[in-house]
Image (tube, rainbow, N blue to C red):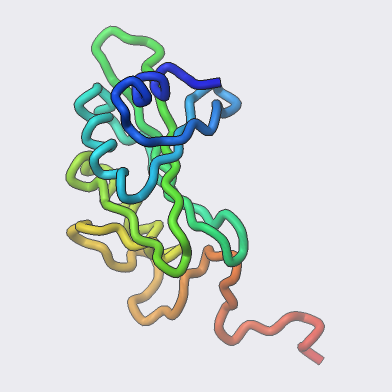
Amino acid sequence: MRGSLSVWLVKHALVHRSLGFDYQGIETLQIKPEDWHSIAVIFYVYGYNYLRSQCAYDVAPGGLLSSVYHLTRIEYGIDQPEEVCIKVFAPRNKSRIPSVFWVWKSADFQERESYDMLGISYDKHPHLKRILMPESWVGWPLRKDYIAPNFYEIQDAH
């Protein structure tokens, strides 16, 4: 079942994939990395003027990485604003996604954290550098295949 935003995107020939609805009834869409910046601008012009949150996760060990954007359409006098969840998947060996910093400034620290923890590079982000880990840190701590340096399992301790 497609939501109203997915129907609108199809009507305007914008490539996406509907992922259904979350438990709160918020429509979830998948956008290809190469289409994300253009569609982000379209969403902003369409009225999704607030980036509520951006996060990222490792889908599966050795698999895709996902950058997730929760957008809200803020309007005066509206009690229940429209929301949409966007997922942009990228392969871990070439995890590059266009930054939406220039569309929603609130993406600044959030995209930096996703870069720092998972290694997703956000193209054209003006300050893309580590934000939580020291610059000298090797690897991406939230990837499922990450092995902490100098980490020993309890069974190896004896």
